Image (cartoon, rainbow, N blue to C red; front, side, top):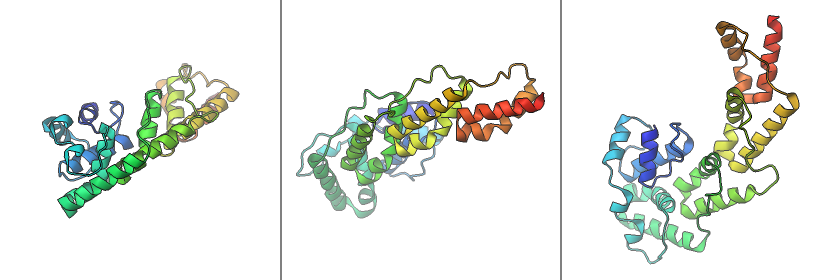
Length: 254
């Protein structure tokens, strides 16, 4: 998976950080690559896909969107180019070259008249994953102008109070897993501002509650049992609810 993500990024399809996880951004990048190469757009990451990626020419060695006949001249970033190609893929592979060129021209004209891609370098890797996932529909369906507008809206929303990522370094591994899982919908659907607000809310609830119980004296079987019994709270309700569940389960053992 990491090799697939790295190769997609090299080819200009923004799969996000090569973390080995199949998120929405990675799946969207796979589909865009498959559509551009005339392959079945399955979104599946497997050995066959990796082989196709390895055989694919680099993005710079293929004709760029700007080299095609069009009256509107605009320099596209690799992300904008991938977005334009995805938005026009139906015309390209179904309706023919005339419809495809007309789609390219419409998308480039909209891009020239709209906002350009904002700078996301100040965001953390988790925030970048979130903003790309939240804007993936615009990126791969509606085109680069809509994609850039979505990125700009999401970035502006992060200026609100409690909308920046809190420091999670003091949490235990289980607590970090729990807080990330509880906020995953916001991360991959609603964007980084909502994701960070969720993290801050969960962290405040955890601080109010206090730390989790010490399970080190339990047997391996008991630890597995208590973790299983509290798995819903861990992966749905967040670390405060998870720690409460652990404490309740531990009290029943005494």
